[in-house]
Length: 115
Image (tube, rainbow, N blue to C red; front, side, top):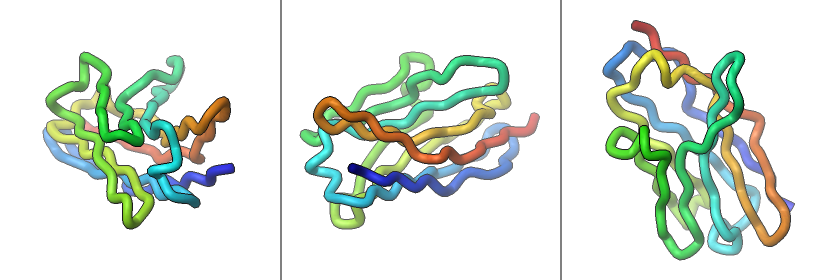
């Protein structure tokens, strides 16, 4: 079982930056992969980025270069640094953890980018 708590969302102007945090309830090195997804109003949830227990990172092609996923093992926390934000990045951002056959989700944090 893993509990995930996201934070760091908010309202930002286009071109600005935000850093999202996802705190896990257990050692993230014991979790196969942690990642971020987002869901905009009226759209399906989509993949944003992932980091594996081995440190490999993966990104949605359209977001590579603007978004960076990282982790602090000592704090059991994964981050998503988002730069040069655009109005189309507006969405609820969800943290995700895949551990064996199980997948866990956080409650989500709202990111709103104004033009």
